[in-house]
Image (cartoon, rainbow, N blue to C red; front, side):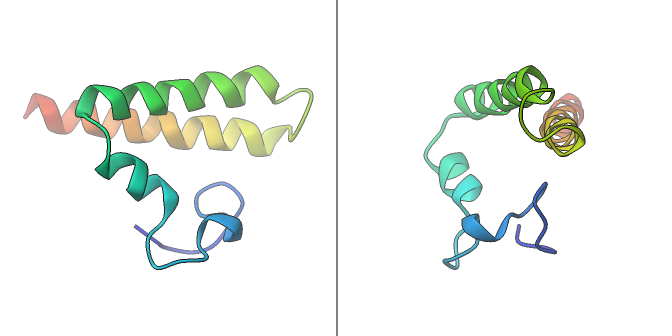
Length: 77
């Protein structure tokens, strides 16, 4: 899943090994648990954007929301 490094999708501090942290979390979670992880991240970033990283947190929330939407679309097929 490693693509370009940026603070929204692939921050450098999560890319220090060959396996990205999010991939480890996915590998140790059920589908439902992983969906909950993504929803939790959406809520976290939306809740804190005005106090911490502004638009970067909105972008992070959108990233996790887009992943959730993609999963739901693939599940519907």
